[in-house]
Length: 236
Image 1 (tube, rainbow, N blue to C red):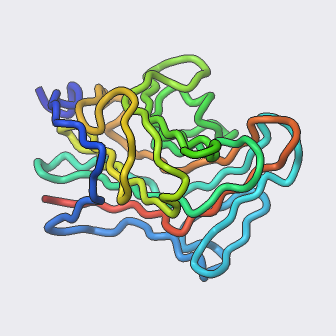
Image 2: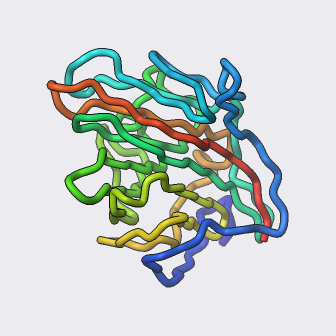
Image 3: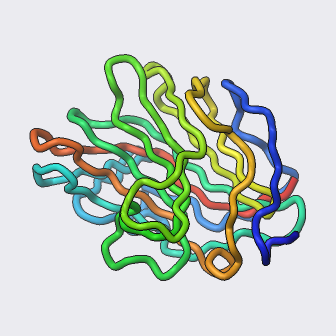
């Protein structure tokens, strides 16, 4: 079985502490440059402040489900060669007051005109809830030809709020996926690495990588600060 049928099945041990991996070689596709008004190849929707090597996206209007999106301009592809992967990285620095969620995704093109992972029929989703009292929850999920929703859970857990800033690093290859962090996380369900079924008819072409910060209540407007957004093709 190869990529043109589906992702091959692999199962690897789940670790509570993982280090962002290093690779023998890396071909950078895009690295956000927050010193540039354009963000170095990234498009930002709405109120965005680029300064001090960071980007802060703000939802400038109250109301649940209001949000602002960011999107990598360049298309991406999952490499077919053995031992190679598409690596996507986000470094979270802070969230503003009020309940919100960060909704990052990689999805086949074309995307809906309204950039919201909830309505995408096919996508790999990485959700981060705004910090609770002591911990911040995350969830990796998969949508495959599905109706509106947040997808089927693949891996979920949390990290202590004292861990900010924290880097999430997702690798996708013909052999499966791997999600690791540069700080300690506590797993709640699923596996940090394993297999995904990605039919080539949908996933063999161009993909887009982006995210969205969304209000989860009516009382506050939300914000999210990131200091790294990166996509690269890597090999072991």
